Image (cartoon, rainbow, N blue to C red; front, side):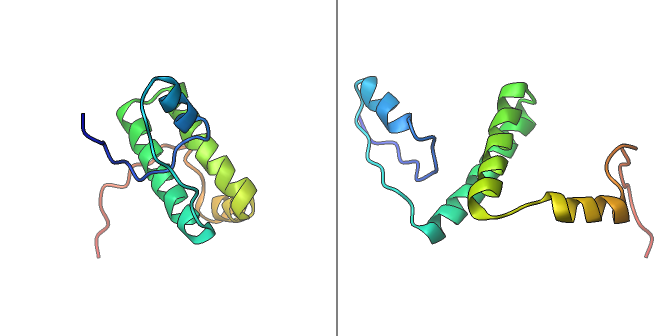
Length: 102
């Protein structure tokens, strides 16, 4: 059997679960700088999975990554979000922009 390479952020218990299934794995902890990059990639990965399968489970994954970014990296979207919502609106009217004439 060959090795399948991932080089992606996974949940904390994944290495233990892999080894408990009888497989071997290699992992390391990301540096602070690298961790931000891996978190951003994880957010995109989870968003794509939600796009492919809009479900509570996939949405929970997206939400969990966003909450981690907020709690542990000092990003607090509600201040800017409130400002942006008041200036540009939200998504309540479900507006799909088709085109803009220049």
